[in-house]
Length: 208
Image (cartoon, rainbow, N blue to C red; front, side, top):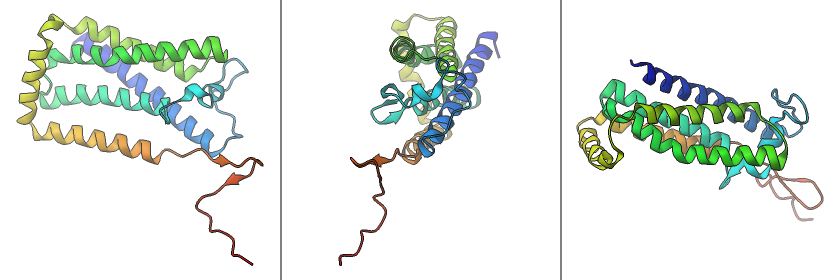
């Protein structure tokens, strides 16, 4: 394993650990709204404010969950390359770099919103931002071929994928796990205008 590949693995694992912790904290806050997060150090260094704000979700999905899936996906690419040979190891850096570009842009957007709009610092979010930037930079440094040749390389990897059923199963398992995680993430309670919690699972009272 080259030193750059080791750094790529390190940043992916760092991001996965931070995103997993953020997902756990966010889920705990949904289940217990009055709970104080372990990373709430002060009014400024505060994870709860970040997760409970409008910036804590994208399309109804918690951004912590999106981060977890992002880093898990990068690890799946690296694992598949190392163990199954798909994609080619020489292509991993380029794939990670391209996949991480939108991640870096989104992380920058959330960081600006957190620091300048919410005026809070989320330590877990900062760790995720560092890991996202890390995989992007290392992925770029690992790429030793022009990006204009990438379409042909992708086509070759897709051909190799057809000959590796285990790689297909690994990818399908990742997609299934991602869907399950999003579906099983606890939902926030819905409140009526009077402030009482609406429990849609509770039976309706009998008419008198």
